[in-house]
Length: 104
Image 1: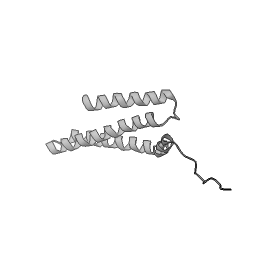
Image 2 (image 1 turned 60 degrees about the vertical axis):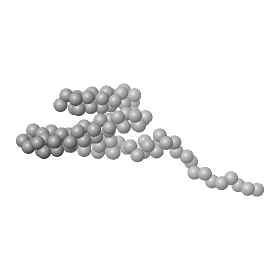
Image 3 (image 1 turned 180 degrees about the horizontal axis):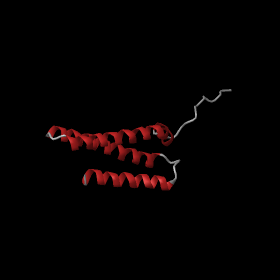
Image 4 (image 1 turned 120 degrees about the vertical axis):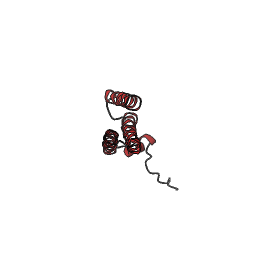
């Protein structure tokens, strides 16, 4: 008789994305975001030239974007976390994004 062809176990798309977005990658995104935001704010405060201020604003914006995206990715893709932690991450990303982009 014919034997069925071997098919490896299938992983869902959510499992593949979750394995790509590990705790280490999220921590690295948050650290890089904080570093860029701090360096950008430091450049804005120290530079008197227009080019230095613009470079500082770009770095700060990239840092805030990395922080917000890291928080949202952690909240939306990591289903193994507690629901209150995920809700706090969404709240953090929203409040931090609004405060950083519109008020500072």
